[in-house]
Amino acid sequence: MKERILKLCKRLNKFSQADIETISGLRPYELMPILYELQTENIIDEVNGIYYFQKTAKEQNRQFPRFFQLHSKQDIEYIIKSFCADIEVQKLIMLFNLSEKVSNKFYQYLRISIYEKQFSELLKHFEIEPKIGQERIYLTAKVYLYLYNDKLYVSKELLKSKNIKKHTNEERLEIKNIYLRSFRKVLSKSYTYKFHIHLAEEIWKYGKAFNTRYNDLNNILFT
Image 1 (cartoon, rainbow, N blue to C red):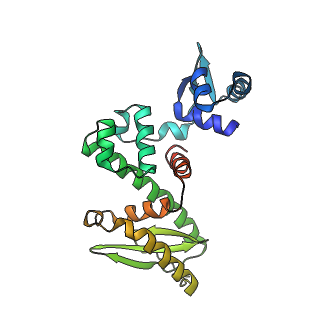
Image 2 (cartoon, rainbow, N blue to C red):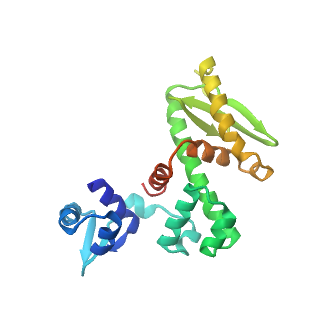
Image 3 (spheres, rainbow, N blue to C red):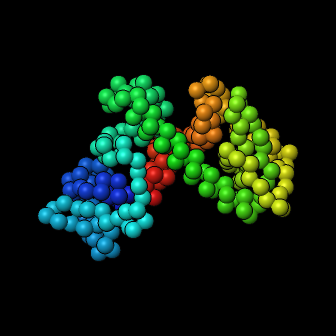
């Protein structure tokens, strides 16, 4: 329960007790001990009934694009939820009165964040057990696929190492199956540009319920 409240505090950044009660559904006698504990740990601070999340140096140094700063946290929350729910950009424009340019920027940033996260994981696996990337080409776009622990990773570039080995036949079959079920959703000429991030997005989304997507994406963006 404490972890859940901590995530809410971090997401809201500035909030009242009533705000947390409404979102968490906890009663005051359940919530207050947790808030007090977070205060004693210097994770949150309270001034005149308003709580503030105390960012770490790492979090303070994190820079989001300027278009994030031009929109409220609530709007950003809705945009993240829309992305996780597969709501198209045109519908996003109608829902939040955003321009097409801004809407595309938000979605593109979320896709890039997903790609960079999975690529970071890929590099860690590759360092321990280098494998030859499985090449896939769509129109003018080329990507390389790697399988570790039944999870498919995407790289725009071919990774290289001296002690490299091939994927097993079983792994190549699994790569093929995962790729094909995700590839069908990115069959568009407009996706040729930045094909690797669109493919990484669909692989990341596949088989995940909305809540799992939403929680995972929040972890990618804010932790």
